[in-house]
Image (cartoon, rainbow, N blue to C red):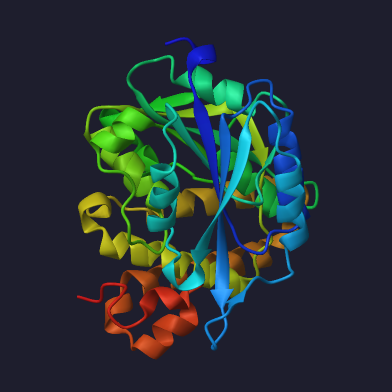
Length: 330
């Protein structure tokens, strides 16, 4: 199938979006190849009285997006109750609302860098063995030197196609994929049963692992670019890595026997070398501290079943995941 003939829907979970979401929608509207639909999955809260509480935070940006609806694609907004939100389940629900050839997922803070984002992703699927493709994340202008280098480390300039043959060489990076900006071939997605419907993190890597194990390939498309980076505190780094490790512990069938610590060490060493070369030696203590918090969070998450529920909820970025009866602790 030619790229121009491929239909694509963009699915975006949103919760109290900010100005970056406005820029995201504006730039999707300006894409050379436009999506057939944009499906917004808006998480809402419920007050104790049971009445819907649509926070004013972000409402103006959602309203703006709906006003931008163009004749060549539709924008739809579907509400998700906060207690029902799940990284995998919510995206699976979004996928069920689409009948496009490609299911493209983005986060509300990923802003297309140019007008070719969708074009470049669609081109990857002209190869029939590609089951998924993800784009390159560029640091925002305000990103620090460490975060900027991390983006470069994880999202290099060269394209790549990953298959099961790469597992001995790449390890866990074989399954790396990011729903910050990623597209999935619908036929392959449905063949494999779609996203897992209960996970605290890593729904994209779990899906990519299934695609690769089924004999398909995952493409990294460096020409499909979005601006996306974070400025996490040490505490937030700990909690983020805690959740990441919880997902690895819960999905042993995907992550068992594949170490991720070595990739983390490689990132730290290369970042340290980069700081020295740039004359930023004074940033090394901060890098060491940040890396320590990341690793401690990872270790705690891998062993979360040994921890009391109160501590798990305190350390997680998604404490609601660990409500009674949810979040496996077997």
